[in-house]
Image (cartoon, rainbow over all chains, first blue to last red; front, side, top):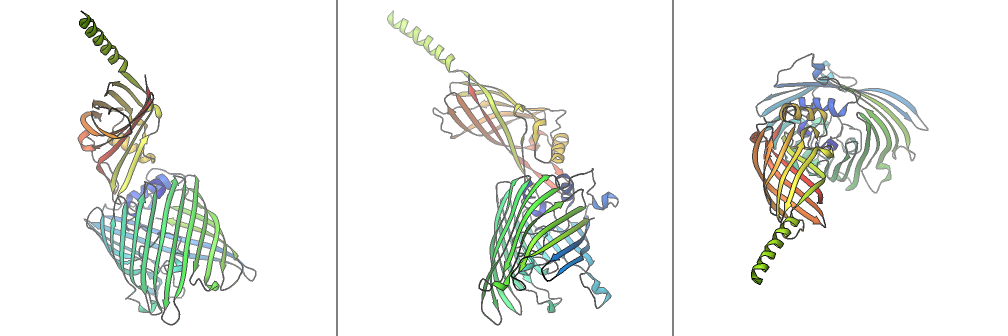
Length: 343
Length: 187
């Protein structure tokens, strides 16, 4: 949305760092500037069939993906259910409480209850127009908050979908600067997950109306390692129909046993929107945990089409050359189709 | 006698000189931009006029004084999002009722040389049917007969009887920064 002058996520999302449930304004905007075709009030929660009171904001996301992998040794296709969550936020004055509830990604859940989970739940206190405090379970603010969670700067760094931790966050979101400070307390409810504890800092600076650049830092430790991560990111809206997202993160990881490793992760997406709602894009992403070890390299590059025909619908098709040097010196062909429906 | 003739000639020369120095600015390029902040998220709402002919004026430069009036057709304003434009024009500016805004210079004294410096100006702005004094800074540049004036001033929507713009969960601040650029030939 940076290309339309929306430099801060909270204008359209309930979460100060974006992602997940959108506000009523975000819904209207998704219809107005993101979709190819639109009808008045079409983007309302379940098309306006269910009226919610002003203090309640509700939504839900359903994502499915079909993948196709082609390697000299293996050809495989998989249909993956990614997400089926409902989400609700209640606002009372300066306090907002948000929770998601949905099906967990457990394939063989040991107990019936384990089939369900709440990926995110938190309380936001808006102290002033600029200052927000948040406590609960969510992903730390670091780099660009991409929905594409499989890339090197997300999954590669251990921040995949479902790895949200319990955090305490303070954010200052101003006209030209935003600062997020996050204390990370891991998953005290499930120590077996061995999630990191530490802190993260992200500073973003708006450059004009449609450009933003920033720097992120994170320190984290768990039973197996401690690490520092630092790197710049940029969201550059050249024109309303052309933008670039870029992030580079350097990692210094000290395993409990073993030598210190220097590595990096990066991501880039160049996106052109010839018709409103239809995006043609090129992407590149990479993670290399150890500069000295070629087998730690995973990367992909390719392109695709993303289509938002009407409010509530998103389709994405992408072809990537994908390489994992631990497995092969050659890059594979990887194709995936994703469908996303939101309530 | 000689002294009297000299005085009369000097007076005539001054009058003639004064008439020669009075000229009008033929606006070749006019541009209006505005920016306002909205919350949450310190959203910058920026807009401009999308038709070059929407801004017209009648400006005179007499010695170092600029006087005159500039009109803007408000229907030409756009913020880049059509729904927002519709709300701005229908609900807040009430363009069908008040199709134009008008700016009248009340005080703008040009410097002796034109080096692009910012100088103060005062004027009256009639918007939404209400006229209020406004003041700000103007950058002036002159190259031969070409004159360029870039004004910047702040207004408050409430001063002009415009209610605070609000849509869904986003509320715009009352203060709007306005930038008006005029460029043309002195005739």
